[in-house]
Image 1 (cartoon, one colour):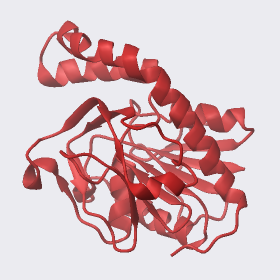
Image 2 (cartoon, one colour):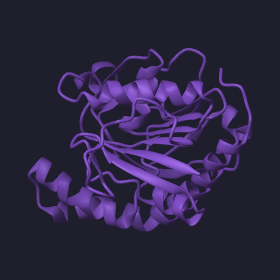
Image 3 (cartoon, one colour):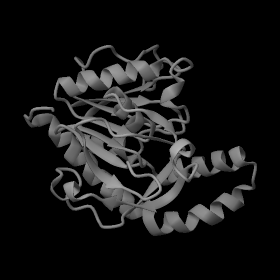
Length: 252
């Protein structure tokens, strides 16, 4: 199995989603979309125009917004590629910004949370409410009630037509959806590791111009309480998602 990862920020790598794929023997190509660079070889590599060389697609997070396509041309390229994989009945997974790209690829608007919701962002390990449809979803059917998963985003999206919503939160209703049988969008950060989170704490402290200790005081107890359970869940989801590549099924 060959998986394409679109890495939209170097501080948002695939983490456990890549580690679990390699554990399963999958091959991976990582493209840094902003720098147009293969992260393994260093060669110039743009977002592919077709799905032909790959069996599955993961689109990761980044600080940019889908509505900033003029500054980040990869957004339109990624949107087109998502549709190609979907039409070819190959698994797609969008994470955070990636979930917003998937929503946009199928006609839904993406916007800053403060435009329509009471909060400006979600940050930290926050509990998920799984929709009834998740109970028989191939990836999520045994997800723990109220599982806390890492969030860091200030944008959200409306649901495209024809999707099945799988998770919600009161402050940001559209947390996860499935389109057809193999295309998934997750607003939360399934991929995070301890190392990724340490980098994010540095980044957040710098962005807010506060001492890192202030950020650590908030996030460290959450990491201790929730990261292990999240990682176990993320690895299980990744294994099941990869299995979809070998299953026939009509995309809607």
